[in-house]
Amino acid sequence: MILGTGSGAGKSLIAAALCRIFSDMGINTAPFKAQNMALNSFVTADGGEIGRAQALQAEAARIEPTTDMNPVLLKASGEIGSQVVIHGRVHSTMKAREYYAFKDTAWEAVTASYNRLAKKHDLIVMEGAGSPAEINLMSEDIVNIRAAKHAKAPAILVGDIDKGGVFASLYGTVKLLGRDAKVIKGFLINKFRGDMSILEPGLKMISELTKKPVLGVLPYIHEIGLPEEDGLALNQRTDIRRQSTEGRIGLQQVVKIVVVRLRYISNFTDFDALGFEPDVHLIYSTNPSDIESADILIIPGSKNTAADLALLKETGLDQSVINAYKKGVQVIGICGGYQMLGKRLLDPDSIESNQKEMDGIGLLDIVTTFSRKKTTRQVDALLCDNSIVRCNSAEDKLHLRGYEIHMGESSGSTGLFSITPLGSDDKISDGAFNHNCWGTYIHGIFDNDAFRRAVINKALAAKGIAPLASGINYLQTRDAAINRLASCVKENIDMDYIRKLVKL
Image 1 (cartoon, rainbow, N blue to C red):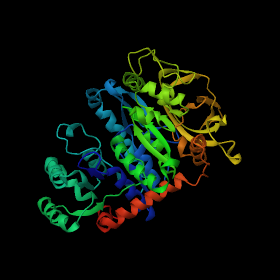
Image 2: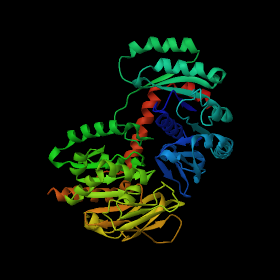
Image 3: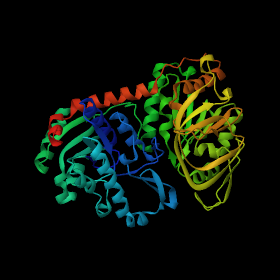
Image 4: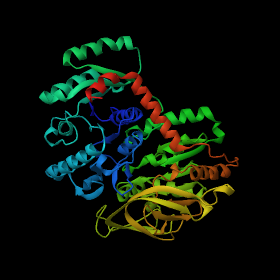
């Protein structure tokens, strides 16, 4: 198990790296996180919803993601509480006290999933959540020490030295855990940049104080190129990609893509692939000048569409979106953003708020009605109208892959895409467009290389710039990034010690 001294220590990516390292060794490996609290989620082949991090870890292990890899998923929905997803399906929405009362049922789901995985795989790489030593929550915690004990898993505690206070964090975690600290078999220091000779005395002292070895020091890696678990790193990612993009291509040729940074933004990893294109400057912003000066403006998914739409109106950003549209900017809505761009949002059962009706931004001729049914499925899709892209003749019929995660259905002038759910022959109308504005429920749509390039090329054409050929294979790029991460971890961690821990 990979534990952390706190959120953002790097647990998810270190677990992914270990999944790839063990997979390279020919070991049948699977990831597992008992409970994840995240708005970035993924849909498995059978239509179940899990944390995006576990999908990435499964990809690193070279296996198909399943709901057993993340049996409990919590999706914060604002004041109404968190949506509780058990074994990939929505159970209910609960506030914190209600969920704590539910913990025994959640634990049954955790143990059932772990036990099934353990029968199918030779090694499980487990990931904790937050800190295992939150003293006000330890009795309620089902994802850290309790899960490690159930699995009889040796744990490695990761500390983020870039935040400062790493030795205090490691020492404090061990002391607060008391007897439970025996599950921790070593430390890993992450995100180090500096002189190792200055760090080494601290490594020796922390080992002497705790009687636990430091298994490695990982360097700070710039531009990992892999999806983040949550929105904590959005500003950092923006700055890094901006610098690297400006270094590759003249600013006059950069396509500026602005993603509106919603309060409850979900699945922002939908746009990672855009950031790899050599002529793209990708930023997340709520600045009206950014929104109105974009070449492509995206309103992303939201875990609380009504609340985020209300905030856009309160701050006047809805008018900035309209101004951008009037200037000829490509305005795109994905999932919740698609709903916001419509004429009306109806919520008769108060699924998202107490407001039964809301006016949308009004750029798309659709009306969305929320219901308690949640749609989660992988889909194949066919672009039915090429007005929204600039295609080469060979790409006139763009076939796409993606997935849906939404509550509510939209009706009206739909039909931009024809989608077929995985395992079905049904043809379903999805998406709408209005001149330079379009929207869809399809997550992961920009992972499709030809479509992504065609959308960007339309923005280039509007600036009088010749289109570029699609030279980025995003899946291969992501796989190469996993390999680079795995190599870095393997070179800087005591793998012999870890192999002995897991008896390999």
